[in-house]
Length: 499
Image (cartoon, rainbow, N blue to C red; front, side, top):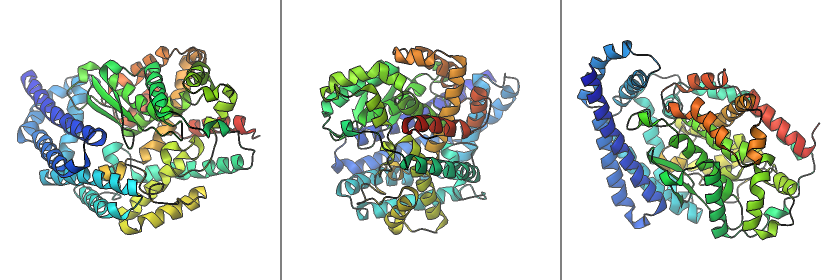
């Protein structure tokens, strides 16, 4: 049976390589490609996506899985091979329900849709993206239909990013979190705001770029196995475990490139530390998007916006931006942690961030359920922004066009950001329990102990374990919002003097 297992691995590796080729095409489209190439790139992406899908769901794959079933029963259930057989069987059963024609059509629609979104965002005109978005949501609703019956039309889409999680469970978690975050935001709004004049400045884009490179390298992003580029919307992509690339966005009006880069570097550090033994298989990536986001949000916020990190890194920031030389570390710390309801999710403070996610989840569900039409999305978005954050976007670019996700067909992705926030705090409690000297290490610019802890407990396993099982292995419990709520309350009560 070992011969069959090796043949199965060979087939999986071929499908893996084809999907990574698609990732290269997508990376190039977002980083380098001229807009005029949109249609040809859509055709290329559709073709390779279809080839990867057909390669994976071939009859030979199914036959080999059946022949390897007996092998799996005799393996250590936590071994690479046993986990691989389990995950491949799950993916095979799911993907066999999806016609190859659909895969090609969806790849074409999202490739073309991305270009339409970029044009619409630049012009701040939703109408330029409306027909593409309608097509994408129609295709996502069709995708859910392949998995009927389901408890909710959103479930099959959420399953793509967060295996084992149901819409009802997410809504229940958010129902618990929302009123407590609203209460915290209200308490903060009643206190004097920190002095943020230091962030109202011109920050040279080239200097921001160099600073971002230094920050990513400092926390452990391996530039010998990756690179940093610019994109309209920052993202991370993996071509192999030795080629994990990140992007960032730079604006001279803000200093957000630093934390944007640390966020993407967090994703990449996870991927770069997956065990090499899992390369070219279904296991050579993160366990889920929520767990992935726990890593990016941890490095961006829990580390990157902490006093400990600034004691190490703020002098470097000041060297790049001399206008900050008269600004104290404490002033800068409070400024970058100021709570201000804003239009842009990726620039949102930690206290209001989850409200942006909940808004998007509710809009996605409403469209899929047929309770909201795509052409009414801008108005519905603005209504929810007023309801949740008390502000109204002045245009589409600052409203419903700000995120790249829908143009990429990533319907079902957004909840993982908020879930990732919660998991990050759970993990952080465990790291500190095991390593009481963590804060002092960060102050000294020593991130090795933290990285090695994360690698051993989490990263190296890749996708071997179900997400919620992995969370329990690392933290001892299922997803629990309490540590995150406690983290927010402690942090902002101290900054704002809330009793």
